[in-house]
Length: 111
Length: 153
Image (cartoon, rainbow over all chains, first blue to last red; front, side, top):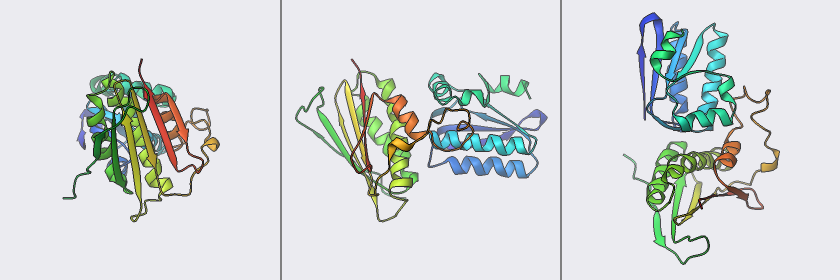
């Protein structure tokens, strides 16, 4: 599991989740994004194109980050969910809370 | 480098539903072991099950949830405690039993995490996901052991 952080045109901080987003690593993702938020970042894209599965702790971190980013006047988008991950978001109705795009490029176009 | 988790895997007498193999594993009360424990189980079960996709996704997520609950809430991440994992499986049935050393939990008290007021909460989705992803969920009387069963026709 790794989190690859990059900065795209327009100042969008892109975090690619390679592996799983679960209880054992959720705090690392949270800290990476909070550090970028503290450093002035306001546009965030988390890409799940290379993600196997997400557990409820991972979903919880996304909910928590979404609120913190919004409170700072920022914007969080998600991309690259496969059919299984989309099902998780639909089951938990979190698809109603997040802006979700099929691909990172599509998400970047929406910022 | 810490030692890898080592499961005890053996053939067993057919109990029911074509179950023919059992796997036992003790997982330390540290959430950093969850991913490895889930992979160990998935690796052993996937090749024997008629629906490998359900192992790769449903079982991985449900087991990660149960282990996280056992480590964080059951054992309180106590270093002197472990989580017992007992898996029985065959081509069409997987039964995963996760037991912690805590005093138990009333699983009837968990609110619906999809209600509009709960949706923005960071917690409370674990048991809900387990129930959605497997076919049957049972608890022991104490509430410190969960049994999850996935079946395929």
